[in-house]
Image (tube, rainbow, N blue to C red; front, side, top):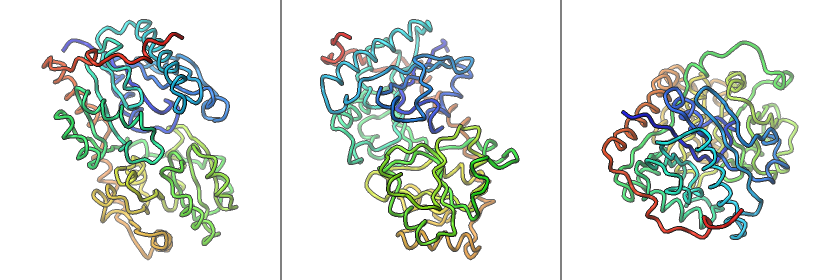
Amino acid sequence: MEPYDIVCIAQSSWNGVWARPQQLMSRFAHHHRVLFVRPISIAHLLTKPSERHWKPFEWVDSNLWVSSPLMLPFGRRVPGVRRLNEARILRVVRLAIRRLGFERFVLWFYAPMSQYLAGRLGESAVVYDCTDAWERFEKTPPSTIERDRVLTAQADVLFAGTTKVYETRRERNPNCHLFTCAVDFEHFAEVPSGTPDDLVGIPHPIVGYTGLIDEARVDCRLIERLAREHPEWSIVLVGPVQDDVLLRALRHPNIHFLGLKSYDELPRYVAAFDAAIVPYRVNAATHHINPTKLLEYMAAGKPVVSTALDEIKSFYLNRLAIAESHDEFIHSIERVLSNATVLPVESNRTLAATRSWDSVSNAMLGIVEARLESGEVHDASEEPERPCERANV
């Protein structure tokens, strides 16, 4: 079909925790030019170490560029600041599209708060890859919930990252498709030798976690209990800390915050775990989550202990140690480390090998291209213009 490019509107940094957006966009870039857009607050540049290498625009790979428009702080709370930020982001993205010479492109959303861009960039189609139930998180601003609702109905193609997200979205968009998480199997199964420097000296057994460390998902009380009741365990947390409250609450000598690691480095850390954990809170929001890290742990051949999230029970009931309480979570780790519970590690590796990002990315593009070829795309420009798009910067 006629060539097209992709403009991805993301909610996390390209160099942050490597997850679904990066996995898919890096593969799309094999055959399409990709612009990855992630706005960033000036406050984050000053307070978050992982953001201090900010560049406004950079070339990443042969067909992939990253644009990181700066935003003023307090945009979520102050409507006037939000309007200024949105007007600036719209202008910066338009300039980047013009600079790269994109003419026919798909606007691919991960961040529903950026829904206002739809119909204002000259895109050929709108795709929304929805991986979270935004309305279920306590601290989600009402404006984001409303934009998620609009974008869900507005998208020419809607992808859902979990079964529960799919069930809640498909009635609002008939072109909704379920694609759960996948894994780059070889990346985690074939690990280079050698222990990372910051793991040297940390005693085994290591109970490890990888990913974003935030209060909305990670159960701080559970981590604290692991450390307090088993001082002989090393609790290793690999990933950026989103909430400083966790650093203050989890001050135990056997808890080790190792920070954000590059995707290339990550398999060496997972390889050092004696047990891998998913210590998520159990609530209305997390029941809609199917963590990508599970298949990464499985590809690495690690026994996994998880809290009892609905999505995890649906997909992995007999493959993991799934705990219904804090006591059961701790007991499950005890049994895994003592070999009293033997999980089907090799069978899990075989399963992980069948869930590739390559197959997911190809199938997604097939659906998008069928929509483009049909010509049945929604004219997002018919949406009423909002004041934020008329603000001057």
